[in-house]
Amino acid sequence: MKTKVRKLSIRWKVLIPATILIIVMCAVIGFNSYSRIKTGMIQLGVEEAQMAASIARFAVDGDTLSHVGAGFESTQEYQDSLTALRQIQSLCGIAYLYTLHTDDNTRLYYGIDTDDSAGQQLPGNTFDGAYAEFSDVFAGQEYVQDYIDKTEDGILISAYLPIKDSSGKVAAVLGCDYDASYVLERIESARSSIFQISAICLILTLTVLNIIVNRIMRSLHKVNRKIYDLVNNEGDLTQKLDISSGDELELIAGDVNTLLEYIRGIMLHISANSTELGTSTGTIAESLVSARDNISDISATMEEMSAAMEETSASLYQVDESVSNITNSIGSIAAKASSERESAAKIMEKVQSIYESAETDKIAAARQASEMSENMTQRIERSRAVEQIDTLTNEIINITDQTSLLALNASIEAARAGAAGKGFAVVASEIGSLADNSARAAEGIQRVSQEVIRAVNELAGESERMIRFMNETAMAGYERLLDNTTNYKNDVGRLSEIMNDFADVSMRLSNDIDSIKEAVGAVNTAAAESAKGIVDVTEMASGMTVSMESIKDEAESNRDIAGQLETEVRRFKL
Image (tube, rainbow, N blue to C red; front, side, top):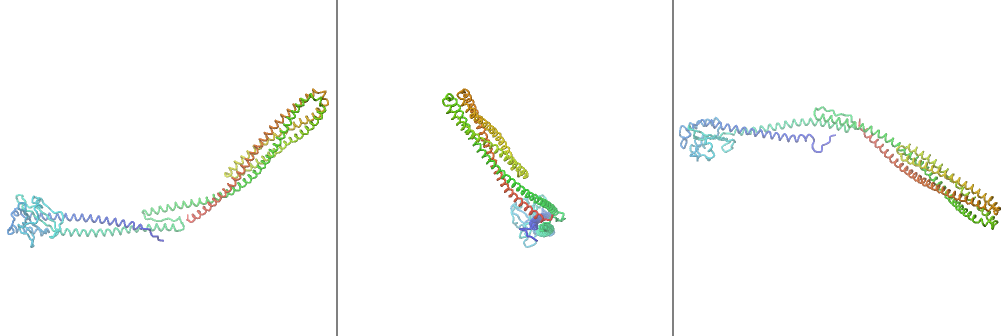
């Protein structure tokens, strides 16, 4: 397929400037040659004119010419001189030969004139010319015209030589008009020859240049055809340009072969890389699917941990309510103890009046002891609700154990996820730490609740002893009240001390319950934060799942691109 060039082909880009340059060179050389030949021919004519004038000058005698004037043409001397000058004129190719004379350096007149026509000038005839033009010649200097003068008398080169007599004085001036027509003919002939030679040289040069350009163009066309075959031969990069022209085209062909080798290497490299890209993209896609499954498992685990933390929060709320009830009960006990301590004080004040109201006080004391026993029994039974704290604490410890197990499972799943699960590993580690802290707080609550239970048991024992004292000792003492007033006072003092101890134990128990309440609040706050963190982790897992899907889609797109690239590369023969 031959495609036309946009403007000028290389042939015309070479031929047109070269032709113009050759024409200019031929014109310059021809003009220079013509100028030199013309100058040389004119110089030759001038020399011939000077030589002819010099020969003619020796044919006449200066002494004879000094006597030339009107009527001199009838003398023998004139005839001899005229004959001699005509012979020289005929031999030397002189058109006109004559002598000039002057009168007192003012007027010029003819002497001897060799013209044999009707226009011959006789001696004494005036010469049309000013003396000033010939003054240097009459002064003894020679004058030869250095150019060809085209006149109505012919094509002439004029020479004027002084003729001296025997005394050395210029007697006359010899005028020689040399016929230079042959010089112009030779100049015209030389010009024609130069033009013809230039035209022949131009034609030969252009012919040779055209042959050279044709050879170059053939080589270029050969290179172009080879390159066209390479381009349109289904991407066959194994072909080579075989050109052995020995010039730059061979170098160009070698460079094109090197370029083909380079392109072939690039295509091979692209083919290998596209294959590796497709394989690695497939691996990435599989890894993303695996990571997505792992993230789904982690998300499910986080949801289970969130549910467990919600259960923990609910249990802690129940513990908090139980502790509040215990706090209210212990407050009531403490108030009752304070009231009983005041009652004991009043009893001490009424000891003096026991005599008057022994029976009434006995009945009232029995009734009060019964009420006190009943109230104390109720308060002690309500205080035993603190044992529920130990049960709830065991549940919290079980929940924290499950949380630790879930955190361990989350860490394992995050480790399986690799780099994508690093964030989940950190969250799982924090959850594990929170579970450990919750376990330690629960153990602290358990220890405090055990102390509370122990204190409640002790309080129950003291209450039983007090009730037993009231039923056995106090009531029996009423029988012996009158006889044992002093002992009764001591017993009332002991009762007051017991009530003081009971009040102190109640205060300590109240403080311990407050500590338990604060610990439960801290555990509840930590559980809420853990639940929030688990929810955030779950949301992050969902977001990462979406991101994994997007990355997977991009990886699939890259694999398709790698396949297309491999298809394009396979179009070339490597």
